[in-house]
Structure formats: C-alpha cells, structure tokens
Image: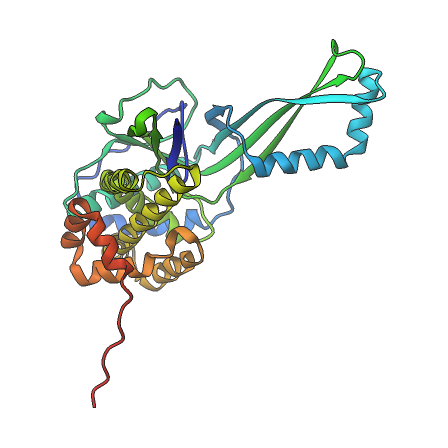
Length: 368
C-alpha cells in the first residue's frame, strides 16, 4: 500500500516569488500602534480578485465532487455539445477525461503601504508569540510576494518561508477530449475550470506517506501562505500567530499520528484519514488555546483599544466546523495548565493532552 495524505488544509508545490524587504522586528514598539490601526482600515476595504499569479500546479489531482459537477454541466449544455458535434461532423460522440489538476492561485499585494504594514505586523506578532511561548523560530523568512520569478526549492530543514499575499484562490481544472464515434482521428478539446476564493487566511501542510511494510514518513512543506484580506479583520491579525503555532507543534502531532497508526494498523484510506482528522482536531485545540491566551496581549501592545470580544466571537464561529470540535476544551485546558505547561505536555506527551481535552468539564458542586 502506498498512501499520501496531506495534514491540514493546503498542499503547495513550486512557488513564484519576489520580496519586498522590511527590516525584521527587534521587538514590539509602542509607536507602531498608529500604523497598525491603519492596517485595520486597509483590511476592511473591498477584496481584490486579480491579477492572479500561479503558485502551485498539482497535475493529476482528481476531485470527485467537482468532476460530477463538470459532467453535469456538459450534459446540460446542449448548445456546447451541438457545437462539438458540428465541428467533428459527427452524429454521436465519444469522450474521455484527458487530464486534471489542482492549482493554487494568489493575488499579490500591490499597494505598498498595505504590503509593508502587513509584513511588519506579521513579523512583530510572530516575534512576540515566539518569545512568549519560548518555541524555536521556524522561519527562514517572512516575505511579501510581489512579482513572479523562479524560486529554487528550499530544504525545509533551513526553515519555513511565509509568503504574504492579498487573496488566495483554489482552481480545479479538467481537460476533456471529444471524438467522432466513427473517426477518432479528429478531436475537440474542452477545458473546464472551477475557481473559488477560499477565504482561507493561512495554511501549512505536511504530507503523510505510508509505503510498503507500513513504513510511515512525513514530509513537511517549506512554505506557508498568509493573506491580508478577510470578512473579519481579526482573522487576518490572528493568522500569523496561529500558523506559527501549527508549524512549531506539528512534529508532536506527527509523532502522535505515527504511534496511533502503528497501534491500529488500519487497512483502509478511510481509517487512516480518521486518525489524521482526530489528531488535527487535537492540534487545533491546543493552538486555539494558545491563541486565546496570547492574542489579547499582542492586541494590547500593537493596536489601540481592546479586541478581545471580537477574538472570542471569531473563535466561537469556528465551533460549527468539524476540525474545531475540541476548540473550547483546548482553550479551557491551556487556561488551567498555563501556556508553558500546556506546550510542554503536548510536545512530550500529546496523548495525555488529548485525554485532558476529551474529558468533559464537570459542573461546579453547588454549596449547601
């Protein structure tokens, strides 16, 4: 059995990048607050959906749901089919799916003030989060993507690169070939593309591979992508810290997944995916707990006014999604243990942390 499964949200491949250089933050500077209030104003402007730049193209990736939608579109578009029949001088058609791919597209941030403010904020917020948690810095660089150019593949051991963009879109492309039933020499090619602006603010992926003799390996992607636009501006401000914590804690999550798979020896993709989903929810729980602890301090230092109620609302909104079903338990346990003890427990004994967040909170005993 050979199985490759992505852990968390997004798989990335070859990237096109250039960099706007902003000096790395030496620490949090009180004078930045006025600038970052201006950043909030930028975030609340209408999102741009172009020009788009291709960042990754995964040839051969197949999406069953979108494939069904494409076939339904072709079946229902009689004018298109009649046009193909006429071009092939055919009465009946043969067809096949010739290729499929998933593409990651981004809208670079071209407004210089916005780009520089967002990059500086990301560096300041990440700097504070790493100091506060005492976690090692996972980054090779944090850079604003500006113009497409060739990027040499970077070994993840050198560090993760965070690319900052304005907007992110996923595109699924299928290429169909149509033939004359009686004469397959002539062909008509039709390409269908389904493009969605995901609203996904940040993403980081490691890939799980199960090879022959149940050999388990993980390959971390050396890139993460953060966008500076969102319906809720709080999510943009949280993303750099949240994704940093995912990256820093991923090794512990992979260790837990490896141990669980060795114990269970699952015999199906569904069983493996269930283990991965289980542990990604646990990772979301501890990251959410740390975010709830750290972000109010970052807001207090970098922005005027309290944003704690908006942060609480943002975290509550996530509860409806399956990957966040342990989020509130994670917030509770991190609060009870304290930030450093929670990190120490998760990185050394992730199973014990999972037990703690899986135990329902008992109501307080009423005093007689």
